[in-house]
Image: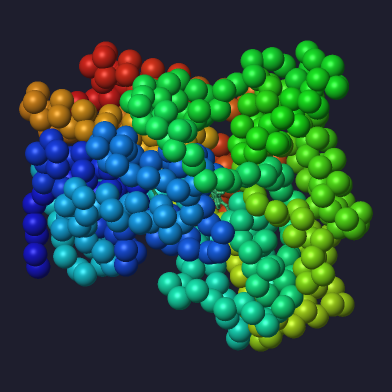
Length: 530
Ligand code: FAD
Ligand code: NAP
């Protein structure tokens, strides 16, 4: 059996794995990336469904580790499409000669911490074993698909596509009757496009979601030139914003203005489009009454946009706004005005059975050619706990996290020395613009490894008490928000049997400060060993 010794094993070749391998190579480390998929790109390799695009601004949803790259790359739209982002990631890999360091079609199956040698023993799907000083999990917050457990689903004999396992060859929906289960961001992005292609589209909606218009557009040369003339400062400024995004906060409570003024502000953001709707006022995420006003505004919009009042009523969410991730769409609500689109409420009448060519809901049988599954992910922890990672005392991450995930800074886990997570549970991750958050983690990990090597430390491990206090702090913050007040993948309630826990740290600036303080204090909350 081959047993190669390297400095760092990185698991996953999305934005995180690509930036990590670049950075580690720059500092002279021998690093290898293992990627289960057949191409690089992670999210942007797998989610090829029609309409897939980012909903954070392209010029912010991109790498900043190379000034040349960020100056040279030309984004064509405010919200880049999946093919464009994938092309960008492939370009990055080729430009920095990283392809030879990435092993595709290779799943990391097991990693065991060898305490006496202070080394990770990493087994991959080919059966090879690698020894690594450090193990970096770049496995993604939204990378393990969630397949619904609906009676008879496996017997459906037509085409079945999960949005996050979309085939390379574009499916043809013309003259087909298509059913789609799920109305989160993925469903909401693809429904308008599939509706325009299919003969008939049936949307199976369990919980309606709030969506705001994207108002996507091409990027003007002036706009791009302006940002590029100050790109580094622009990035620095964004790290000072709550979500790490250039979404200026209107620092006023929604309750401190008149109804007329409030609706004027919401209308302005609605017309502008995008996630900035959440920063219309400073308390939408913290005050249920303020949040209610924002909900009402969107419900009224749905009433205006959807002609059939019964359909409009069904589309209106009743949960707190943003408690489930806010969606960003192009023509979603309007799609329900099309004659070939039907909305089926499966909250009131769940799907009873899926047969070889149909879906049964109550006494209705819908004959389908194609079934699309847009039911999301086992988020935050799914990809990590899918790997058998055995730390000190023979305990796995999966077992450790049975009572809920716990990590220090969202980077390290007590009992798992020399293992680092990129945007792990406990960091801002999905409550931030992910690419800058990924790079902030990569830089932190890179500096940490440099420190350990320079000082001849062989291992670093998060202290259990520091980890506990960190998670308590995270929960104290999230308890003041609307996030725990509905069922969502943020909490893990979409996965049967998963322990409910909120695991994203709200607030990019304080988080970054804490990460810096830990370093400045000589890695407070960690134990370092020689
Ligand atoms: P991923 O891109 O998920 O990559 C993880 C990789 O790890 C995958 O390729 C996976 O195959 C691999 N992997 C996992 N386990 C193993 C294993 N055991 N062995 C080998 N390989 C493994 N975020 C934003 O901030 N803005 C957006 O606009 C935005 N849009 C999104 C749109 C969609 C459709 C989705 C699904 C997510 C979106 N996100 C967005 C979140 C997005 O996941 C992140 O922005 C980012 O792409 C994550 O990069 P990553 O490298 O951390 O993880
Ligand atoms: P999601 O938000 O979890 O939505 C899944 C949908 O499927 C929900 O409507 C859910 O209903 C439904 N569902 C799940 N299980 C079901 C079942 N057994 N029966 C019937 N319905 C079921 O997943 P997603 O849409 O893939 O998005 C996940 C995240 O990825 C987003 O929140 C976002 O962070 C990211 N994303 C971003 C973009 C973008 O615009 N850039 C696009 C796609 C994804 P319930 O709500 O009732 O559970």
